[in-house]
Amino acid sequence: MNATSSALYIDEMGYAMSRLEIESSLCEDGDAIHEDSSSGQTKGPFKNLDNEIAQITKLKSMPHQQLVQVGSGRPELPVSPVKMLAGRESNYSGRGRFSSADRCHLLSRYLPVNGPWLIDQMSSRAYVSQFSADGSLFVAGFQGSHIRIYNVDKGWKVQKNILAKSLRWTITDTSLSPDQRYLVYASMSPIVHIVNAGSAETESLANVTEIHDGLDFSSNDDGGYSFGIFSVKFSKDGRELVAGSSGDSIYVYDLEANKLSLRILAHTSDVNTVCFADETSHLIYSGSDDSFCKVWDRRCLIAKGKPAGVLMGHLEGITFIDTRGDGRYFISNGKDQTIKLWDIRKMSSNVTCNPGYRSYEWDYRWMDYPPQAKDLNHPCDQSVATYRGHSVLRTLIRCYFSPAFSTGQKYIYTGSHNACVYIYDLVSGAQVATLKHHKSPVRDCSWHPFLTMLVSSSWDGDVVKWEFAGSGDVPTSSTKKRVWKRHFYEDYL
Image (cartoon, rainbow, N blue to C red; front, side):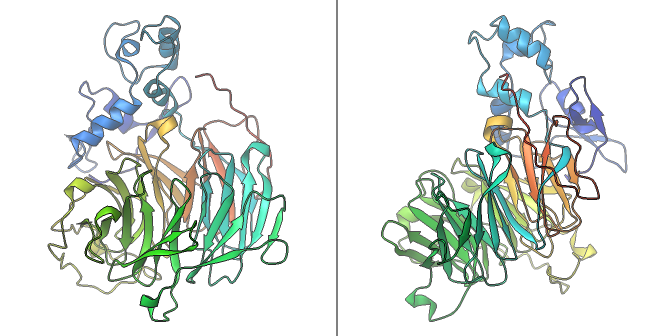
């Protein structure tokens, strides 16, 4: 099913709901339905969506059954905040408080769609924008060598302005250590630099005000080939880095030993994205321009370069992967203009078929996606679900699961070449929101881990935040006046 736009409706609490969501909430069995725009007929649940992840998502974002039945005595979804608060005060659930699922049911209804409010405006393209794990810091990386770390809790004050060392083309990726003491940044070079993000210096100029140590990801196997790093991520314990390169390889760097500990010739083309699957760091996911997602188990890498499994379904290269954090599910953004949801239990031991679809010449760096390719499907598609509506062109557009704390990972969101941010419902596939402000491609965006806030960054140089509601401020206008005010939230949950 294609995720299509729906008219928005406003409920009594000001929540923007799509018609599709309203219809979905009225289904007694919880399955989403949608209306075919051509025939006007309703259809069944999201085609091919695995029942297990639908149930897991429902459990993480559904209120307690007793709260659902408050007042009327019969199930009613979505449950209004008034009824849920009354049920909590009357202790209908027997807990005396909201559970995490109750909280998600409330918060996930209030999408960060209002705004935007301008955080910063630079003269060069923004390539990276990410909140820290606790939401107190925000990192933005620009093509013009600047990496800025903003203190979210202090009114978005620039805590550190880093001038990148030995930059080649652009900042391709950044990653904060779990303890937020260090930041690594990569460019089209085999050297990844690490900076002390927790130091007192605001202006960080390499080897002048601070040392930017270089971590060499090249090895003897590279034969002197100068490659670039597209993706770099800290492990959850902060002891390792995983990286993907234009040399078709995956690298693991041991920070304690200060040396490269693993290099795998993983794909037959650029490895655009890598990440650890979960907190254990045993599993690594990778995505490449060869169109394959691969799973690597470091506990059983007996045959060098042999993945634990391969996942097929994208027709073009993969630009980004985000893990759900459970060592099982992840999503990928593809140059075939789709996001796909994967379950690694469906993977194959090797590539089992070739889609054989290419009857055209196409380069995503400067051409639009061919119309004749939009209706093509991979003959061996192993994905659980496919989401369409955004565009993936010119740059490695990123996509993510929404936060577990506030939404139960109920949504998927992504940047887009057409300068928008798209939010999809994970289970129904509905496009529930489209955020419009930017004038150029949105390469990256980040949803605050706890607050109803999303920040997007674009090639137009703007870094802006979106919220459910502001505190009286006027959103950014076309005149691009700077707004530097802090929005406070009351934790009523």
